[in-house]
Length: 377
Image: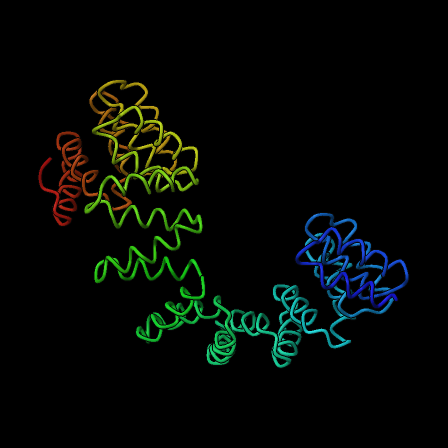
């Protein structure tokens, strides 16, 4: 009777989770360990407290699957409690526990992590093969590649993508093959990588891959599409810039603002301000440029913020504003910072600024600027 209740739950868990829960609860109340574990699985997303309770009951009753599920649930919230449950489950032969225990220990106990991952991988756990490949990429690339290939052949799209990255510099054709397989398996990063690689040689194919990635909601793919279409289809490019910017991509906010500067400066300013809030220092510089004629005081504030954040162009333009207002000492300091970072305009400006007060330094900076192709304003 108890087994029949449990089987009813198993049959209904996908089509009618609420009714499945009723049957699992009846079976669990009658002492069915599998029902206790499956109740935990059923409730893991909707009621983690209840799920943990059922996993604990089943684990204490000796279920390796429940031990593995309980340990996995506790990895991020209570690693100290997670480890013993994962160890018990792994020692009982549960490959999920072996793999998750190995992953948990990668940073703190790499030797033990490798041992556990190898146990799981040899038992056929695809995720463990992938994690071994990642773990060993630097220390033992040949072994890492073998594990990644095994994971990829088992259908792991992450491993396919990792193989593409691994082979990129040395075996381009194989790398592209793995990227394509990963993309066909749904790996968004591989779709984006193919979109970037094919942008010049096959823009139509590049667009298809980027559109697939963008359809998943990936703002990086949306941004890549905008760049791809900027010259050939500016209206569509603007759409994708807007989508990526609304998704929080600072580069998209910035490039969208640049696109709008001539036609809609007010909207450009709003996007630049949002890009600044998202940490884009180039947006500070471009806000200064946008406001130089209409609001020089505000422009100066943005140049100052950009310069403080290390933006070279902001240093150069702020230096020019200060020189025009007679603040030559501050202008010199800013241009020297920019020149030290290799900016030829700052070098050229220093040559002009110092020609009367310090001719030797002026010649030095003029010559440096000339070597970089800067010989006139």
